[in-house]
Image 1: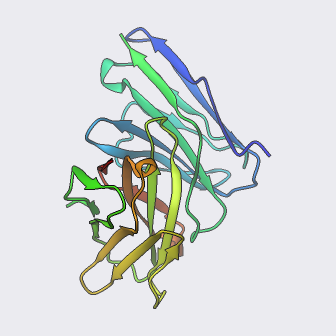
Image 2: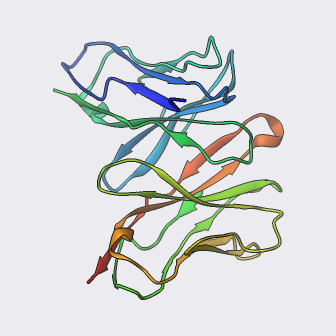
Length: 112
Length: 117
């Protein structure tokens, strides 16, 4: 039982490059979310999903796309990376509406 | 307006003392949940405690308890008999919207707790 797996753990991008942060969970959780963590800002919600085929925007969605074609996977796409997207990204999932999230170990992204 | 407000950016507490970390929230939902997470220097997010909006008793988990005052929209975390290992960032979070399938969890900015020997 791997829980929530995020890849890669570290990434350096050049401005304008694109990439996908991967998130997979093996707990059959319906609910999945992406957060970014910046110093002094806490965790801010980027996108979230309440089930396969359903996604919605969170607090800071600009510059990011998501899709949820399966229950297990919830990739986050940066189409054209900007230095402002330098952050630590967390993926999280849960089973029901009354559960807390299980978090992945995070991806540290630097855009130069 | 902020959904979750943590007014203490940092706190210093003597080892073995009790600690209260403040959290206030804002929601118009009748059903919601409140959480506390711990983030040590290693960066992982650790779930500590959960309180549902309809729970009449305050949640407790070992040395952690949640002081839930619904009318004041307050959900403070109390850590009894603090230990050096409690030094970490603590986040308050609220889950809302699950009744209309707009389910999401919003976090506060966190409180960094330092336990002094």
